[in-house]
Image (tube, rainbow, N blue to C red; front, side, top):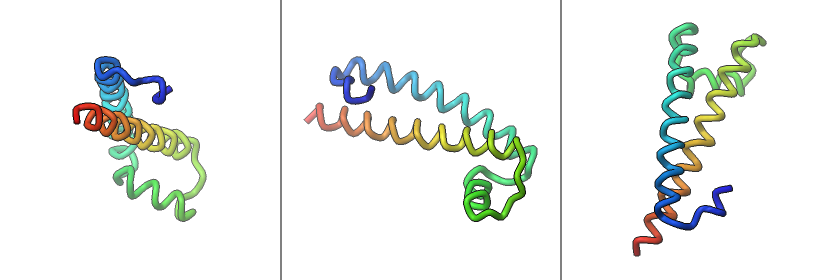
Length: 87
């Protein structure tokens, strides 16, 4: 999908959509962080190190965290593509 984006105007539109998606994910992450009393990075590290028991909420939280990581990666790739196209 990202490979199809070459026009700087289309890239900017997609970046706007990514920003809105990331904002929604961050809101959902904040709810988990408030409920469980730790930030998402700390939670994810504990989950990966098997320091937490299994709970359905943890699977949902991990999914949201992974989604945010993917969105941020896409944003970085597209911003780099825009920077290169300006040269």
